Amino acid sequence: MIINDAWRKHVVETAWIFVNVLWTPTEKNVYHGYDANGVLVNTPDVNYSSKKYANCGWWQAGRENQGIPYNWGGFCTVEEFQQAIADGAYAGNITDSRDHKRGRQCIGVDCSGLVTACWGLPAKYGTAGLPSVASKLGTTDDLLPGDVLLLPGKHVMIFVAFTDDTKEFAQIIDATKSTGKVSSRVLQMSELLNKGYAGYYYDGK
Image (tube, helix red, strand yellow):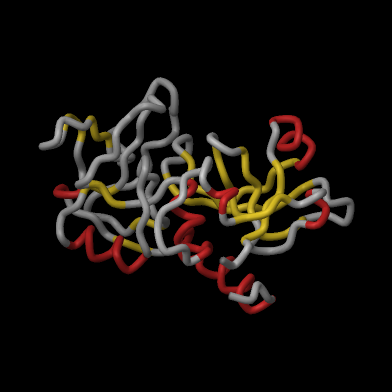
């Protein structure tokens, strides 16, 4: 695969679809408790509140909602999400624990699942595995649309664009437990660098 401007445009456009997609769930898509496999599931609907993630409950059954919900360990396309919702899958899953198992009856994406879908990878790569298909940039000043800001083993976000000439602020798209969904944010680059984030570009393998 050749990584060119058209590919980068497709990555960003796909990410925006995850942010903006509209969907209408029913009560079948709501779940709080242990599923048939003994995995704790908490969909980020308005009736869910977390002590750790106070604002993660957002979507409402019976109403049109915007954005793909966060799903721990999840990976899907937008089309797969819509079909799974129609089939009664649980819409997302929030967890307070890093050793939490993935709910097999849940649909949605986590941060690396979003990158997997937008980059068109053949299988899901976690944040620790993404460096095996991506190369680290020497400086984040060289970030281009469709690249990622990655903290391996922790979190990854898709770079959309710098919002100022000094490249101090960047618009990104990511899936987070704190928001309970895929969303776009503007973040300060110096803060991300202090946390250990670095820029990576897809190798196109």
